[in-house]
Amino acid sequence: MKRTTWALMAGGIALAMSVAVNGAGRDRPDDRHGPFPPQHFVGLINDYTASAAVVAGGPYEMRGSWTLSLDERKGTADFSAVLNMETSDYGIVQGTVNKDDPTTRAAHTHHISLTGGAVSTDWESNCPAFSPAVTGGFVVTGTAIITGNGSPAPFGNPSPVTLCVLGGATVTYSNLTISFGLPASKHFGVKPVHGVVTRCSGHGRAVSHECAIDQ
Image (cartoon, rainbow, N blue to C red; front, top):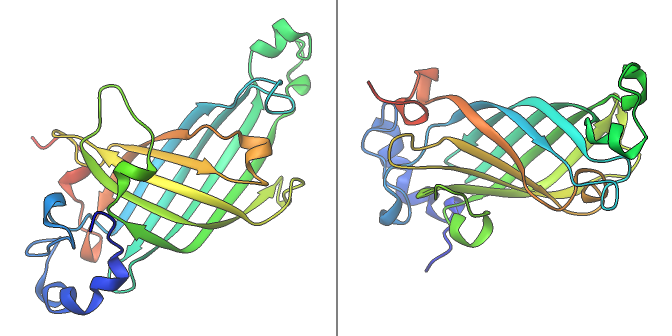
């Protein structure tokens, strides 16, 4: 069974969770992937949308931060992100941006909230490829509510999203991607939005070494 959803394993891991401290002694549903990840993640988002031919007003720069909390008993996750967006310097080439007038960059904000997303270890089937290649992680799927400058997003709500938290041999959880479905993909594009994991923690909020170089 390649795809494994944590909710199906709740009964089997309850005893292990009751004695675990910072992930010690906990096993994933699929033993190929090692112990369960930490419960709390934070990070940054830095990326660009596609061009104006794909995203109206694009390409936009995207800068922000995000948090993710996992509930192992339910097999679910809650995610939130805040973004600043404004037209990139390519707008100067297109003639839509005056380099001497920042107000021509259409600066705006977004708040993104997903509650009760389904968590799975089947990242290979759901997540984008990286170079250098990632070697493990997990994926969260669900439906997000998105704002535009604090009000309901003009493109509509809700939208399906896929979150991938991935990493490699040195840092277990280093990368985040967010992929949007309609209607949000009309604004953010269909390509994954990239970010970085800056910190993670386990039970009791104790800092985990799975999101940093272990020295």
